[in-house]
Image 1 (cartoon, rainbow, N blue to C red):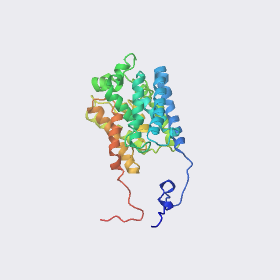
Image 2: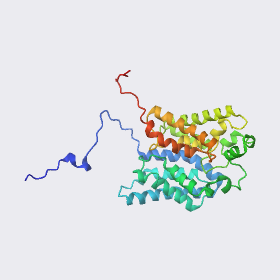
Image 3: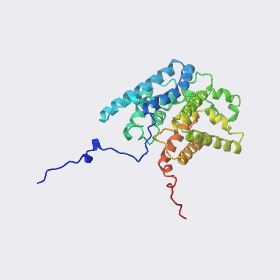
Image 4: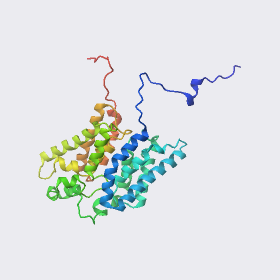
Length: 326
């Protein structure tokens, strides 16, 4: 009987996948990209902590720490290599903190941050394999499970500024006429820690685009979708509907446009797919704000758009040199 021969190419540990030439190494790593992303969040986080005080700092620190620790423990349990040093877990923990109110209890922050990593990433294979934006999974768990701790008007009732979106939804345009758009853009509104810091989020998003960390397709299409639907609703009923600038400056629109919707694992990759995905998510924001029970609508709109990302990825250009058949 012949001896069993094991060929080198049958050993998966040494198998290599080589693409066609030419190869061009850009020099960027996942860690450096996450460092730029965290840096882009710092202006909004700083404004949120300055506005809401040490309570906001506590939420941000706890969310980031629990996300990192959860990533380490879950990767060890799954028998995978621990690669928490790439910064992805920290970045997603900070994004979750920006969606939470400054008064969120410690256990809610810990539960949301753990679900961000466990349900948003680990069960699907880790970073890059997630079909949904991980921080939005953690936020959705908190919003559905403990709504009274996530209600901004309830937990931040002692703040003098109102929740502009809730005022519009339940009291009409007359309740927001006295709110200057400049104040809303500068963050002078009731909101989550970083989601309502419009000027800082815009600065961070433009920084990511300028540093080529972020392609502008999704942010521009997302903002265009929000503005288009807001203009349509305002044109149909100007006495009951606010204009596009109001919707662009309120809630978590800018956070969704530059940081949540472009999540690489849950968004498509083709040019037209990116544009359609961003525009559809922006349209859904206004649909939820108009007919849904949640005044903001951005997180759920992006989660719904994530469901369509695989379908949109089927929109591909024809092969180079190929002919279009009639």
